[in-house]
Image (tube, rainbow, N blue to C red; front, side, top):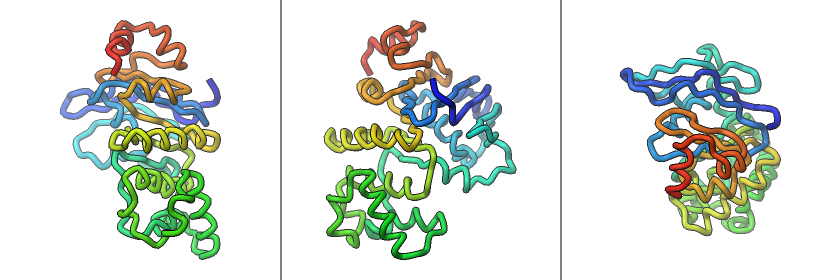
Length: 251
């Protein structure tokens, strides 16, 4: 496995003495697609929210352990949360375009970085729309409301807006669960191309999707990492009986 960009050490999350994540120790490889696989409610999304410190928004959660991003310990209270979250773009299950035009949605991500030059913004909006395969579909209606796009197009627009912020990591939380098969395939294709420039962490409970996309697999069950490794190791030669049962069930 190549150089790790994210690392967790003995990460635990609990609520009212109930464990959500238990002693999670992971190294996330850089410029790869890491798939976090497991049944619904097993802690996958909680782990994702730990990475970009969205976990801080939830009252009553106890978080212990350490998370390193490029060797910086990010759970430290003195860290600049805005900077950390800028480095980790989040793509949710459902797209949430801003109530503005297609162009302005992407420009918003650029303005967060402090870019104000109109020509530079225009060039970069085109670049990021091309990067997510949306430019040819929207080039003639950039001033149209983003809400008029199909849900699949909205998801790619949200991805473009997230990339415009300048992240190193894309956190994708079941990003195709609300999409039709064609739109899902487009998002998957974008991920395969984007991993040249970004590290992608994809949460899914869809086994077929995991097999199509994963360079590295983490299988979580009831808050514990049961198995981790290459797709060949996890899918073809799983060591754990729990993993074997899950794979046989064909989720």
